[in-house]
Length: 373
Image 1: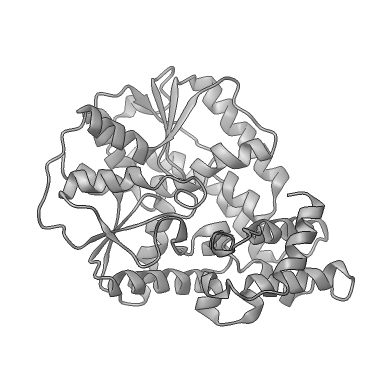
Image 2: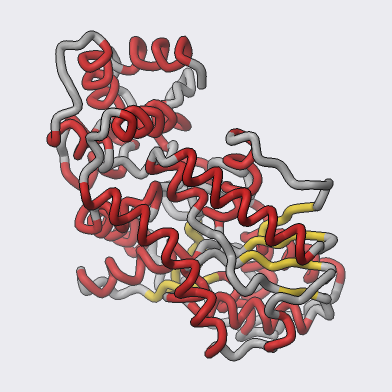
């Protein structure tokens, strides 16, 4: 968004409170300053030099998951999420960044090294790590290498079962989305260039991505930062790969009949922002014989899991409340097993379920399917 579009967003949103019910942070805290209108009012006062980037105001701008649900709910689709993201850029330029945000940015980058070290201990074929010229390069994201390792291990089972020639990077720069959303654009651009260099060295024919955050980084944030692939390479999310493999008969799925209480959570980056809605539902139906339970808020109107924009690092307490709210809604909808298609969503939900003692199982779509091959 350019400056004029930001101004138009501020002028429109500061007079309107119609989307406050769509803000996951507001639903968790009940603070008007956490609503899109609240952000627009604060930003208008700062632009008018009536307020400055005080600690209290900065804190508010780092307590937004940039999930985009307010934008989707708005009749005019004002980009409040981008307004917040650009405000973070200004906070960094004003040298007003809280220490916890600086630490979060450092942790996002350091997770890549931790992930590279951890894959040595996972039950995957060692020859796929750093494999040159594979048909498919599978990008995992950091969470699948560190916290939800079953995501990567299940993907290995599924791609091998489908007969695919695939590989993964030994070290995968996966902090791009998080850094970009925190406002660290130059650092995000540097990580993006490192990722492209790694992809170029491996030289795959196609890229399949198992993390919704990494998928948005590759398909949306890289072009916006002026970073491009050296040549045209097809990029697909893992759910699209699975859907195609099942349809083609490359994956033979055994339907299990005791999964009637399965629901699906649309990750914000995958559903609302990328429009990938049908493929994961077809994969689940192939494994259960029935479509998943649709949550009250689903598809492009799905609520956030709390992991967006690095909030699980910058403000874990609010992230936990956001995740718990989403899980409570799923339980009310009759869901006993909640499937998602992003390792970060899985981590956020599992933490909240444990902290709030919620009786619901959270699993990744690949792990769910791998048990039925």
